[in-house]
Image (cartoon, rainbow, N blue to C red; front, side, top):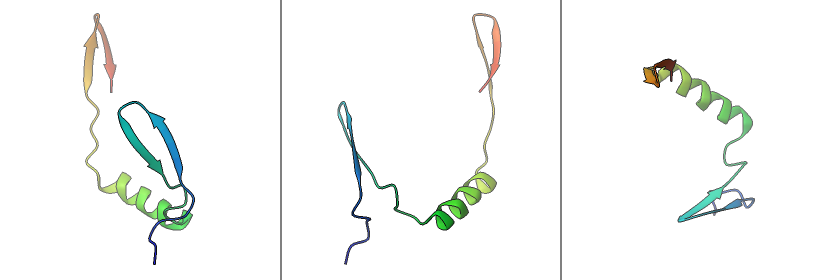
Length: 57
C-alpha cells in the first residue's frame, strides 16, 4: 500500500531536496484544509519602517 500519489515533481534547489506531490489531497480536501487554515490561524500584520517608509507586512 502507498500513501503518496505516484506523480511527483522534483525541484532542483541548492542544498535542498524538494518533492512536490500535486495530487496529495483531493481538491475537496485541499479546499477544506485551506479554509480551516485561514479561519483558525491567528494571522497578524505588522508594520515595519524601511528608509522612513512604513509598510504593512
